[in-house]
Image 1 (cartoon, one colour):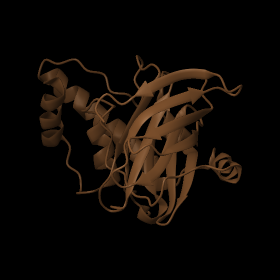
Image 2: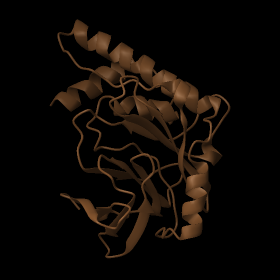
Image 3: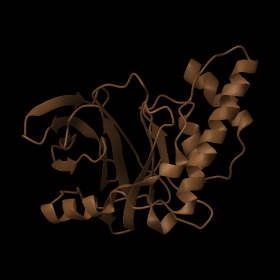
Image 4: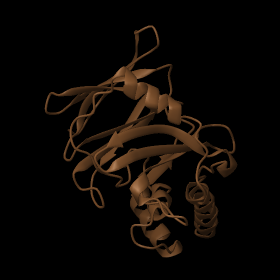
Amino acid sequence: MMDAHLDGLLDELVTAEPRDAWSDVLGRARRSRRRYTAVVAAAAVLVLAPATWAAVNAFEGTPAPESIHQGFVQWNSGADQMETYLAQQGFKKHFPRADASKAHGVLQIATSDGPLDMWAAPEVDGTGTCWFVGWESDMHEDRALGGGTCTEADDSGIDAGWEWGAPHPTYTVLEGSVTGDETSLDVTLTDGSTTTLPVVEHLFLAALPRGSKPASIVGHDAAGDVVDTWTNSSP
């Protein structure tokens, strides 16, 4: 009920261009973070080899372009507006803010549509992380298409979300966060196929065939021990 109510309030409060990346991001402020934004595209199940891991690690720390930086600034502005509006209606709700000055690259995946990037910025209160995912082909000087969310202070374990749609309709993007010491994730999809993903700064990302859904995720630490497991409750 509250999520639906917040959806309506934010639709009235925030004006944004259709498919603007950060209209999607602002939309995340009104939803459970387990309902992920449409950020999609990919061809075959991604199996990360050591060489791919090296490319991912090389992307970590890459300075964010201005469009990404401004996206986090817009997220914060939207959070301010939403809290003020809700307070006027008698509701008290806190939305995370990102430290846009520290926005940087975390993960990058090579796809047939070009690189798929994950950017992150720490929350200003130090309790979590905000992130954005989008294809470089959708990057513009003043805006970037894609979507993202922020972690919540009470998050625990593995949190995963996935969605597909325009402008990369052949792909499903799997993204999420962990709160433990995971360095890699073994992902089993509902069709029985598997893939292994690296965890960087407690975040993970994969580009999968359209329609793919994770059935389970097992997180391992650097020693290979199981840290946590996640099971899809609605496959």
